[in-house]
Length: 70
Image (cartoon, rainbow, N blue to C red; front, side):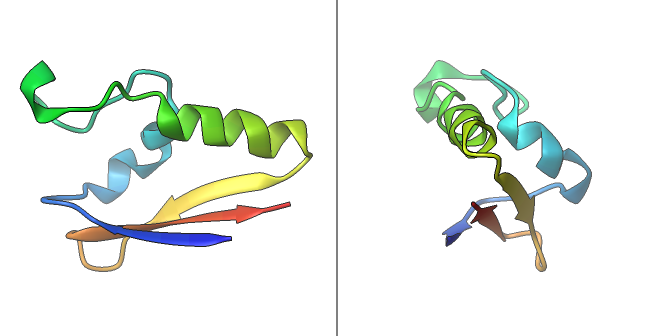
C-alpha cells in the first residue's frame, strides 16, 4: 500500500522518526496544530505484527509517501 500526503516542510533526515510514538515534526509541538503523533506509530505496529515493513520517503521536501509491504 502506498499513501501520499502533502506537508508544509518535510526534513528527510527525520523521516524515520515519523513512526515514533508522539513524534510531531512541528518544532513548536503546539497543540493548536492538531494531531497527537500516534497514527503512524500504530501503522508501524500493525505492519510489524503482520511481519511487514513500513517506510517513508520524500522527493521534494513538500510531500511524503508512506509505503507498507505485508
